[in-house]
Image: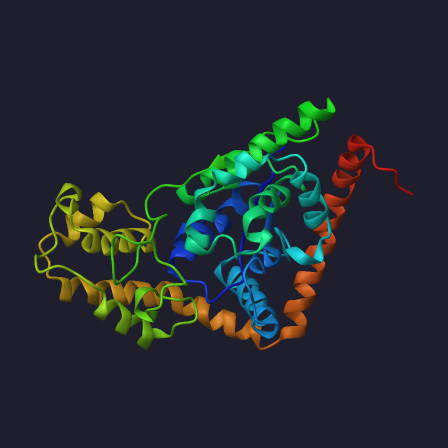
Length: 333
């Protein structure tokens, strides 16, 4: 049986990169796989300080975005991580399985910690072990990942192999990555060499899933470009990161290849192309924003959806954690 797991942190508004690079693909996966588990990873969020009220609000917003984008909570399992104790419990076991040398090689920790690595939380250092627990608490066989997450999935595989070898039991599968094609890496609207990020200080660097039509139009209009018209071939985008980014976004939103888009848009001025891109972005994103607002207006129902999802997740994870505890030798009731 194939089982999919993936998650997103509730830190700041989700943006176009989150949608095109992850959430939209999850919607498609739930149609192709019977067993999909999608999680708002709030335990990961607190590896850096979070205002408690803001974290609660963001958790609901991310859950609403999942549903508005097309995740069906009656079909897929949708919940927030902290409601399922197995994540934290298994993470501690993995803290004792993973090796310091493995974590020291994690490039994302080095990027996030920067020059202050002695002052960051232990959680930020060890969070790849929690990520492994997220996946293996459900014995997930496949995880959709971007290029920047491949290293963490490799660590998950290493932990699974070491656990199985250490205790002489094939408890965990060796999880495989699912990597999607064009449009999975959306770049900043202000700098085509940097990934679109909710931590960027400029709000004009990203289109968020709560932006209305006017905000989307303004951000696309202000998006950085170069003075030349659009080239007529994909090869002509070489060395033009801002042009390439806008073409990638258009191709992804319209479910077409870059080559197909270039055949239509080649030779157009950016002013004309940006108008077409705006119309497309609004047509795709505006219905999602409307649906998100409807969901957020009924917090009790949204919380109930997450609670029901957590109950289903616990049903899957609890016997797996029992199997792990038995393998380790823990005495239990």
